[in-house]
Length: 161
Image (tube, rainbow, N blue to C red):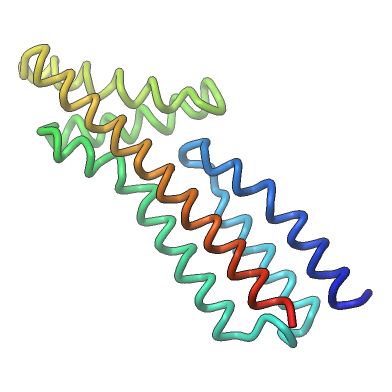
């Protein structure tokens, strides 16, 4: 198989992953990094050198940090308690499992809202905290979209002669 054919094949497998970024907690960047590693192994790292793969790995790790912190930071900024932030993470995960692919977002909002009400914060404060967690998660998804596009672009730059 020629190098160009191999690169096109892997680019075709990576490209749809960019759109999966819109589903919170989806391991898109794990898939992209794994496919890049597989490309490098098949190509014997002739075109995607080790340091270039490390650059892609840094983007992957940044994406993981964004995935797990964006909603929490949004909730914290909006005044949510630590218990509500933990409840929001659990709600996001459970909602994503029960109602895939987008069930995590309403579950996040609802669990933070109910948790804040439970801790007697008042409706306005609970709504603000829930909205902050949702806004943080959406901002995280948009940041991950940028990271996925950057990853894809760099993969092409690194792998093409």
